[in-house]
Image (cartoon, rainbow, N blue to C red; front, top):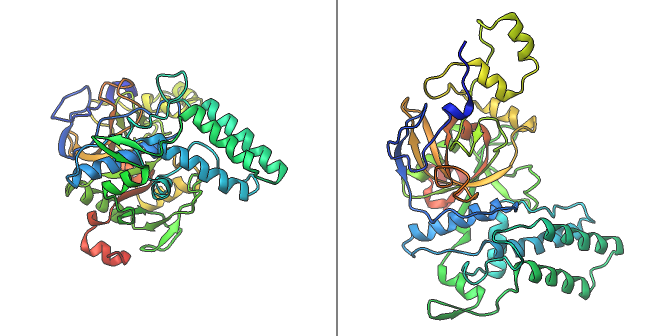
Length: 392
């Protein structure tokens, strides 16, 4: 039988303007205005880039203009918050680079924010972000304080000096477009009401329409997320995108069907075919998932995908194959030539790692299976959903 390669069929367009690629033809259904793609580079700070992109889109939606906000100003405060939490947990907390959207909100409410031009967060010899060395030294200092069972004034000074060296000193005051601000007064000028944002998820091990703490390592702040039936989670996401809002998305990108290079994420239904020769079955047992995908089907268009039920989704979560690897920004909806729905997705891996300007399209099946949570403005919820969740 004729085999196919994932790269050959899983091509996508970021602009989605009825553009034809090998195997797929995408047409935009709706796409909201957002700011340009950025590059988190060699850092695990997707949580901040995705949430910042989402907030920048909110400012655009609200008619406040286009802003380029500093991710690293928020990241620095998040590191400080993690260090406090980790110390009080006697070293058993999370001081990794990752996190989720609530960490952005906490840091913003604590210290405010500044424009990117005021605080780039690169104060070292690198054209792009790289926190490998920074976080090694951060962990070393943190671990010594735990061994000593004390955080002296010198510990705090040492940690702040470390961040000053790598990220730059935090500005007390700065000029922006002819006005003087502090980080707090600049944040206030944006008019961002963090209490207006809600997180939604869908799992069967907790009651629906009630908030609960999703059990992922990066939820170290124990944030509560409203639990919805899967179809209603997807409907809430669609309603937001169709009514002028965008969506901050947290989910799993470790699957074989996720191909940023080719601009697509799919959830293919892969089975052994009846016409494989006996010798092929022996090979089959030695293949990884991608090789099986290449061998199992002959495609001339979009791949058949899994019909994701709440039970399938829950199984993936409880088998630890659905995790919170990555946060991205959903900006719109597209359809392929078969009418299958995809979510237009803005990533934070720069614009040079694929041919689609740093965007990809995630299929409805993929999003149903691999979402950990979405964050949206509460006004993107229907009146009926607000009533179910007790949100005003």
